[in-house]
Amino acid sequence: MDKIESPAESRKLLDKITHDLTRSIVKKDELTRFWFFILIMFAGVGLWGWIIQFRTGLGVTGMRDYVSWGMYIANFVFFVAVSLIGFLISSALHLLKINWAKPVSRVAEQVAIAAVALAGVIIIMDMGRPDRFLNIFLHGRFASPIIWDVTVITTYLVISLLLFYIPLIPDLALMRDRMGNELPKWKLTLYTVLALGWKGKAEQYKIIYHAMRVLMLLIIPVGLSIHTVTSWLFAATLRSGWDTAILGPYFVAGAFVAGTAAVIVVMYVYRLRYGLKDYFQDLHFDYMGKLLVFVCLVYLYFNINEYLVPGYKMKLADGIHLNELFKGNFSGMFWLVQITGLLLPIVLLLFSYFRKPLPIAIISLAVMISAWFKRYIIVIPTLEHPFLPIQNVPEHFQHYSPTSIEIMITLFSFFAALTIISVLAKLFPVITIWEYAEDQGIDKKYLSEKPKN
Image (cartoon, rainbow, N blue to C red):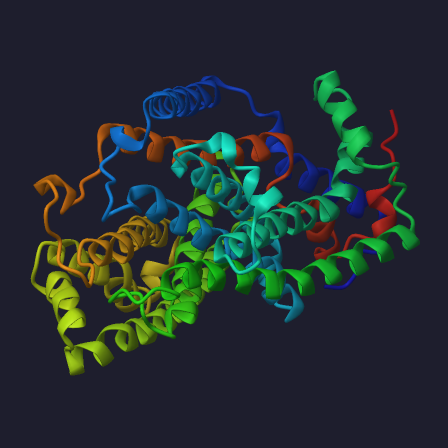
């Protein structure tokens, strides 16, 4: 867009953009307090459940010798999947210079940070002896895929935090200089410290651009690794349902679906809650809908490969597993997930009406719920059908159903993730102010200009 020549017009437009995009920070009402009360209450109940599990042992869960991975690992894989959206939108689309994705990138990073942080927490909660977690770093062996998983998750979290923080620095300085009368002192102090003495000089912007580009390039292999390595934890075994070389790209494609849906839902909430209709426009939802259709089609292709090839041969172990999915105990969940989480969204989102904000937010929420149950289907049925026959064990060892403690801890993870996203929205703009202002034709010199009293 051409630069705005008039200084008065530039300052007026910048004031409006700053006011609108900091509304999430300054807005205080009863709904906000009630929302945080709900988040903290449910997170607290989940923590109480984990304390019971820590004191009593994993016997309070439904996991036993055969189904040793239950709802926790399904939850872990789900959060790892959602976190991959930071790589897709904040890196891939930016590097391809797709401008419509810029307002969405900070939302994607918020979702990625919350998801990957909770993925790490869930692994600790799944451990019977979490006090021995440090042994992974002190005595871990490189041959163990668990070491690979911990390493890529930690690296991805660090890069995601940097990719969120570095573009935020000019915005922090802008709020430091322009919002002295609207914010409490502790927030201004926080912004002053985090702004790192930003002055808005050309050399500083050059460093920002360079750092962002380096991080965007770094996050691509790390982002692909995080879900590929997670898939290797499954595929490195000989179990039917996991013993396939296609599990890596299958996981990555599914991750793009879950992450895209999560970003659309958060975008809609921000648009509705903070009056950002002019920023998260119908255009953005339309493009995100098309992106969701694309990644769903890719995921559909891998689903066909995942089930058609073993289904055509129907070897003994594969046949037992597929029969359980197609017409056995898990058939209802399996077909509901395939239809509501994959086939219906593809068909509906081909029509422009369903790519409007409200319809696509509802569809995306359904896709997210289906994505979680999809991970449950990946984990549980395979563990219930090992190669060796189950014998001389209690009946309840042969089947798995989550207990109330597992459900409480799983709910904790969701509410903790929502808490992280909500806190980030209350502390920092949900859209990058300086990038948006620049796209609107405002010269950078006005961004660093202190308002006259």
